[in-house]
Image (cartoon, rainbow, N blue to C red; front, side, top):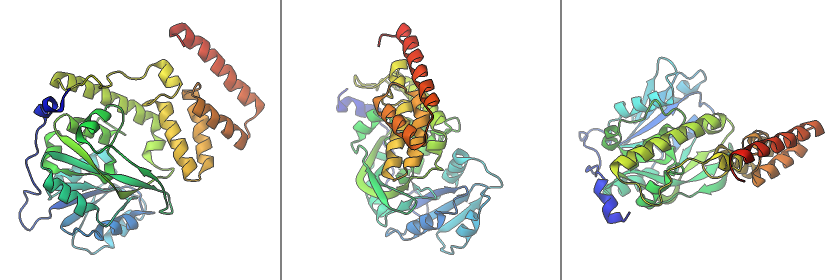
Length: 356
């Protein structure tokens, strides 16, 4: 579909900056915290040292049982507002609470274990001021490990129309890197409590159906990768929810008549899942295996390979990772024979259903 036609469905947020009173901040930073004591201080410092200073920092302690609340309360900067949930209410409810409490017209997301570059807010505010048609702007991110070492650069598409198409395949905005217009996010209903473990992806899909989204081609966030992330601990549930969100978006786009000829409208089939094709659980595992190898965490990569092989036993990449793991983790010959038997029987079963 030509761009001249697709632009018709887009709703401009029509608000440059905040509509708040003059004494209210222009930007509200929403930072949920749950047992984040290890990196929380660094994350807060990276916000307080922004070159752009007209913001408030909402630190929402979601029932932490560690010293997170004490760490937050130690900051006396008047821009810091601390909200203490009476109990753990979960990330989605906490994010929606932050949306309701935010005073700024622009809302910046930040996680309690990441690092914002000093110029992040200045660049994003200027971008939104100059592009009134854009409702959400993310950035490229540097992937960092527990020691703040950069081990990879995550580049994402920057063209708004390319992002809208690419979102039907993957989440192409890094949640803690974004700044968005409060009115636009509230107009689509905020975060959906039903989209557990994929609340950001669901929000970007819904936003992309009404507004334009963008990414700034600069790494303005240090996105920390570690073994306690929800993305890896809930990898299977996250994939299932992402697929549900994608199918729901496809149906909405059909009704809005904004699907293009290149839009991906079907989920991967059985053989695609068994071979770890893109947007499958096996592909998710493989991405994490590669990330842990880059982080020099081969033990964790091997653990994931032993799990991934049962989901995508016919993926050459996962097979190589599995056999490497079998040597490093000293699997017994009986265990390897059991896997080969499983793969043989599964291939015979699949071949009866679909041609291979």
